[in-house]
Image 1 (spheres, rainbow, N blue to C red):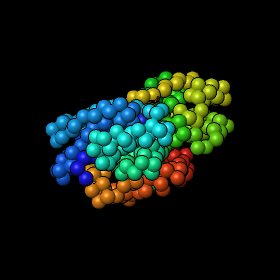
Image 2: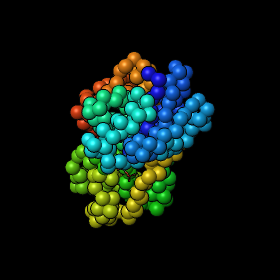
Image 3: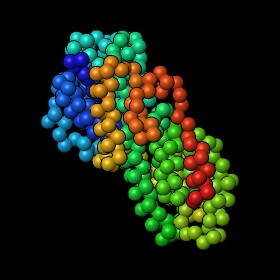
Length: 319
Ligand code: F6P
């Protein structure tokens, strides 16, 4: 292999730059040229290419977002779009593609390979941690730390004013961010899209805590589970708790990656090049029991990542 392309696609996540840096430096060490493709699949179709080398990725590891920029591309969702992308890659002698992104981006990569024979390797980058077969995706740890830092601040005001706070975190279809950040701040209730909302038992729990003398209350709700306003109304009506709402929004996606995300991304970026050199394609790199392994995209994309019910139970007991 003489030349490889790398792109980031879908929602950005902290650590994507560390993965790009690792892929570029590993490739260059092995005398493989790297083409950075800007703006994900849209940039591929528009031939927004930039040659990358050792020094062009200097100082990017600590940056949030993605220096290659990202997008969600409608044309690439069509077979014609993917065929055109393959032709562009061939015309530019780009022999394989490293795709860093979430489930939609990895699905696109899989189809590009199946329909057009382009070797691809995926790196799971999304704060949602909703990709099957990997313990963690790049960006999740940073996102959780941002959530915890912010919710901790809200707890100060909650205690000072004896209020409840409903905090909405990201996760349209996945409750992982709500569950893990809620656990980490000892939230009284955590509402996730995977489970029905039981306002009765949430109210019971908060009421008991209040009677025990607790002076604050934090409810973490995933954006896809329920409206934060509806949750707040229920808490105020059922318990008479003065309630405020905070929607964390996109601050969860930005920021300098944590050490964990930098190391994870670096390991995956390195492994992406090594896998392609061994002619292993159609895989996603995954974290499994501390090791980085390749799992077929077929397997990854045909499984749904389930929420860990043991964690759900644990969170209820510990709060
Ligand atoms: O998939 C990552 C994610 O941050 C989701 O948690 C969220 O629902 C979505 O992206 C937001 O997307 P956008 O940045 O396009 O509003």
